Length: 433
Image 1 (tube, rainbow, N blue to C red):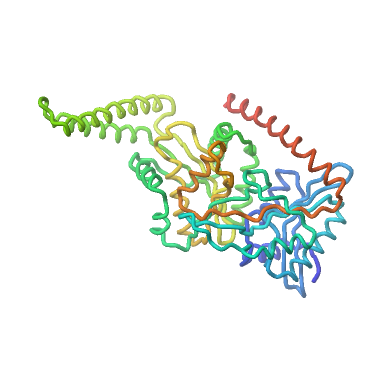
Image 2: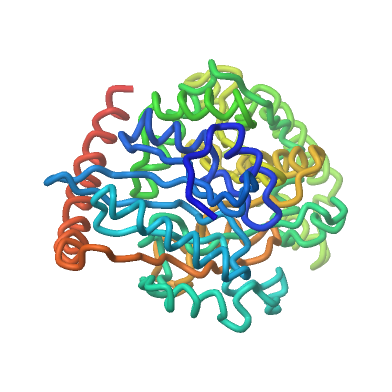
């Protein structure tokens, strides 16, 4: 078995259809995106035995001063991790390759499940039940970076996944009660979800900016999303879902509801009300007041935004037999229409109808303390009833220990500086928009 650089067809034929570890972060397209928009160098490597590919990985090289670099295999490697002969040989060859590139270290974060819970909170057996893979990686010389709980790692260590082999009725039965109610309310308010095109990417980007400012994180510029969309639609599939509100139609629904409430009030006796009638009048009066406020608010939005406004824009990536909800941007108005819920519901059905096997909501937290600012994100995704997945985590194979120590101390400071600068740029861009 020897290590070879694979051409696009060789690489994709192995990775995309791999029964063990197919993942979009190991796709050829993701490597090209990293090259075009993140100034990283992709290597598409395979362990080959008489023209038979046994293992593969996308390695992204980040160039550093002094001719050094580090290498990262996002959600790599792609192989059967229980085949230790292949794992050991592939690791050996990757380390040789890294040394030739003057790499400080090689990072991997395999798509290997450490623990899984179903929607009831019942533990499901993961791939690491006996920790054999974990221990083998340590034996090979990898250093585990710990069981982190938030977004400290390159990729989220937790996610929610929905098994699309279930009937849609079973999937919906796992939704929380409030999720079902909010989807129903959103549909009743005449919200709609459409599939967008490349021309809708500026709208998507604007909603991403609003979300990032609200959630205190920073991602990418418009050109990044345009490149991603183009690359994945050449070979795989990137689908943009737009959740919209027709404000005029919603206003008509609210006015109809108000008329119904007024009619019910008029039907009540005017004098000598019983206790139950008084309670009913009190509740109907509350509904009337609430609907009047809603109608006033929607009328204001109609003047400001026009007949229709896009409130949610989500980008779904497909690779192999899986789909990931990679990016989701949402407006900060009309949240009571629950368009975000409706949009999730529609692209979940879309992925199910396309015959995909796994729907991954791509990222949540392990720290569920009440003061965690990302707990709301977690609770929202949890409501769709997927399995709560914990991955094994990051491993570094350290090649140059002294440089590695210096690099790992300096990089967090540098990244924090960049993050703060991008936050300022984001606020300035939103103000100009």
